[in-house]
Image (cartoon, rainbow, N blue to C red):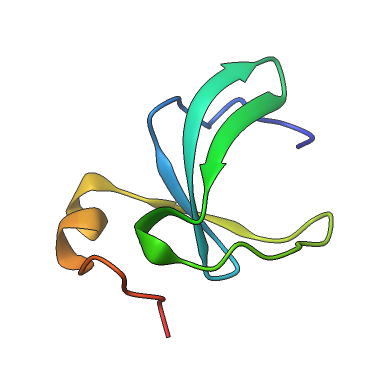
Length: 68
């Protein structure tokens, strides 16, 4: 993570189909829980796009949905 300025704790993100949850943050170091909502934990390359999942988005996603 080069710049985590706009990333908040207690936020969900989609990282190439894997849902992650930000537990804590110190500078640009994030502690996350991976594979949330039964998504598959996979390897990711540096620079992979991370998409924020808002509260409104999360309410539309059924548990276990793999975004595919």
